[in-house]
Structures are given as structure tokens and as C-alpha cells.
Image (cartoon, rainbow, N blue to C red):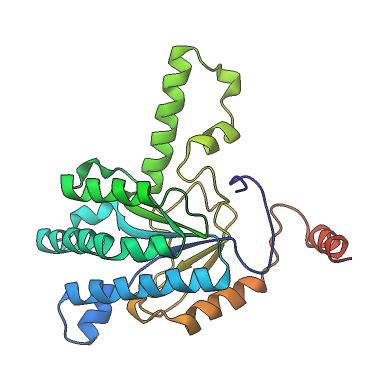
Length: 254
């Protein structure tokens, strides 16, 4: 698969990144406890995975649990961890049969031994799949990702394996999470908020940002199609002029 530094501009995104926001508000609107919203959110995630497979999208990255989410009430965090573990165990075989490769990004050391073991099993069992790369950001933060990359590079500098002159943007990109797949083409955030919330900060430098009022559990095929149709109207310039982009498109279509 092409690396994250290559710009492959098509009307259908190769890589979709999603901040799944609004589970709690969805539950509150229905006078349900917050865990019910998170369970409904799992259904929406399952639905999106199936839609990506159906539409030929090759990479999906979802923000399952941020490093800041530990600040939520202890009861909710505990419920989320239990749901995380049970969902992973319940969905693994089906995802594997669909050709989905599962990968987790983030600092997993804070998770329970049981959850860490399930994560490792999921990654190992699905490692050879290539129909859809499902990347799950858990205990993840974009700033953590950059610091982690810088620490790895610093170790190489101290060991004398690389020189200061070799410290480039490309070198940092090689140490960032998901370095081996294309950077996100389309970022979707549900729930009405219009911010990045420390998600894939390095990777989404040129990503198209789509925000919707729809709460995550209600995000269905029609909502996804709306985002994809919006993406198809975007002219992705990557620093070039619109005329240059159209010229390249004209040559490719001729």
C-alpha cells in the first residue's frame, strides 16, 4: 500500500478518519443511561466498517478512546473498557472473515492485561488481511503520537545511527502512527462539534474536514453518502493552484 506521503487524488477517499462523537447525547435524548449510547455507538461503528468494505474504501481509522477520556467519571471509563473488550472478542471472527485487518494505535500499557491480550490477538489473527485496514485509536492523542516519534528519533540520534541533518519532515512521518498507509483523505466528525480534538494531528495536514450535526449512533449509510458526496466536490490542491490540479486531472482522464 502507498505510503502516507503520496497524494493520490480520487473522487472516493482511500482513507477515512472518524471522530465518533455524540453517544452520550444520543442516550440522554432518549432518557437512557450513557452506556446505552456507547452500545448504540458500537452498532454504528460496525455499520460503518461494512459500508467501507462495500464502497471499496481501503482504510478506516476511528477514534475509540482518547488519552483525555480517562478524565471522565470512573464508572463510565470502566463501562467503556468492558464494552471495548466484549466488542473486540465478539466481532473478531466476523471481521477476519470479511478480510478486515485490525490495528490499534495509542499507548496500550494502561489497559488491563485481558484487553491488551485481546488487542494482540486481534492484530495477529487479522495481520494478513487487506480488504480493509481498520485502525482503532485507543488511549491515543495526536500530541502523544508526535512526542513518541520524536523520542524514537532522539534515541537514534544519541546512538549515532542518524545525523542531525537527516532529521527531516519525512523522517518524522516514518515514525508516526500509520506511516505505512496513505494519510487520511476525509476526516468526519459527528455530533455537531467542529474541532480536531487531538486526533491524527500530524497525519491530517491536508485532509478534507467534514462536520455533521448527526449524533454518532444515528450515523447511517445516508449520512456517510452525504460525506462522500461532499468529498467528491472538493478540489484537493496540496499547495498547488486550482489550474494546476485541473490540468493534471485533464491529462489523467485523456
